[in-house]
Every structure is written in structure tokens, then in C-alpha cells.
Image (cartoon, rainbow, N blue to C red; front, side, top):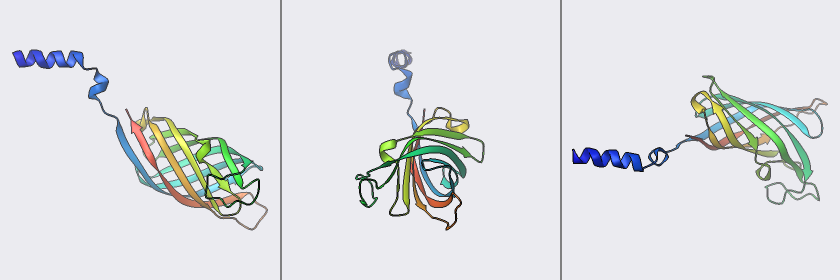
Length: 167
């Protein structure tokens, strides 16, 4: 009986949040898809993600503004090395209908002019289904490919990493 009273007392003293731990899910995915360039700064994208935590489709939109990018792998080609992405959003929908969504981390997101690479990092700010209440981040590193036409479509491949944190 004494042990039962001690256990009940501990449960009353310890807050529930101290007993619960967040669940962390690693993101480890390949990326392939298309970016549609609407004008000099606005893009929409539709890419497929395969790997962990499951196959998904990511769609989003964003703006880029010309910038010097000394803190990136972009070669220094003058006062403007590429684009800094801001604002931008992402919505990742998995085959089971679960999703998470986020907003760009501008200081970590860029498109280079001199080499065919880009990075888009997003803070995960919510989700639905198995990702209800999600936080965390996703970083997508891309290799861009150009098509020698007047069309404004760019095929892209790459890798996505990060972590989803569930309450």
C-alpha cells in the first residue's frame, strides 16, 4: 500500500510533459521532379520523394531575390552569385494521405547561377494524419538541369534530409 501511495504521489508531482518524449523521424529521401519558372523570381515546384519515412509528393512555391551568396557553395561571380529564396512554402503529401508543411529558412536556401545546384531548407510547422502536430526541418539539395528551349521548366534531382518531430 505504501508503494502505491508513493507511485500516486510521484504521478501527481511530475508533470505529464516530463514523462512524454517527442518522437523523432529521420528524413532520408531521393528527389526528382520539375520546377516551373513563372518569371525571374517566382517558381512553383512538383517533386517526388522516395525513401524514409515513405514515398511522397512535395509541392510548393517561392520567390528568389538576386543576392551575393558567400555562405554557400556557389562560386563568387560578382555582386550577384544567385538567388536567395524567401518567401517559400512546402507541402509534402505521403501516399497514405498524411502530410507535413513548412516555411523556408531563408539563410539556408539558395539557387546558384554559375553551377547547377540549389538548396531549399524548410522549418516544418505542422502536419496531418500520422504527422499531426509535426515540427522539425527538411533540407532539399538539388542538381538543376536546363533544357535548351524557351520554355521555363527545369528538371531536377537530388536528396532530402532532415527530421520530423512529433509530440
